[in-house]
Length: 281
Image 1 (cartoon, rainbow, N blue to C red):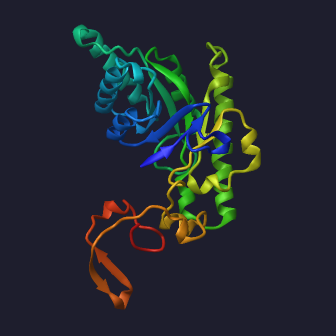
Image 2: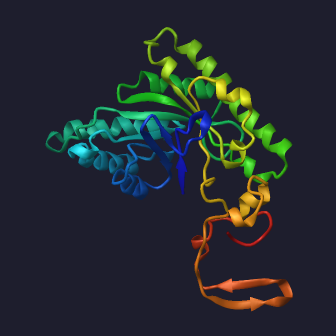
Image 3: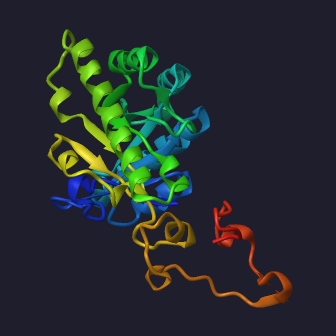
């Protein structure tokens, strides 16, 4: 799935000062995005060694082309082993001089767990230590911090959504403040420019007004450009007519006793997950 990024406080569909950015979780889509107007791409799952090689190859190709020479692909890190993966990549490139990548470093977002507990390092001493490891690596450039409050999809009342959105932002900002104190003895000129990327589609619509005043805070909604049945359930989409995504398929079964139909489409044509109200899509 493609998640729009850099909407900042206005959630402006991924566009800010002619800067078009996107988050995606599949390296194949990173490739197709480079062919499109997106010039700032975050590969939205923690990096593995095999994918570092693929992304590096992709960037090497595009940086040789004039129209795509400014494309940037950021990676996510949430474990110290991933720093080792990056070092291994550059060590290998140094040995294979004839095949050496023109890259000298990767831009990184530290993936933080602010409550969803799916991916990301905790916002405590462990997270601070990992952030400092990234800072000290000659092969990594810290761009900012990233969280996804996916738990907001599990509630359907405004109060609960606001509670999750507020916790996501406050946990992130508290962590960043602690990190800046710890990093002040290093070259700290980059600290004011660090991005703090939070949110989800449900939390976007309960974003608290005071969050818009926070420096370098960006809210990354997911499928708010399309909507689906899950967004209907959460309440951020108030009418089925606002769901713009459609799947055309033949009906191959109709079960009146349980009010369901069976269609000739794979489950992933609709969604990877069931919704709280049952069914797919």
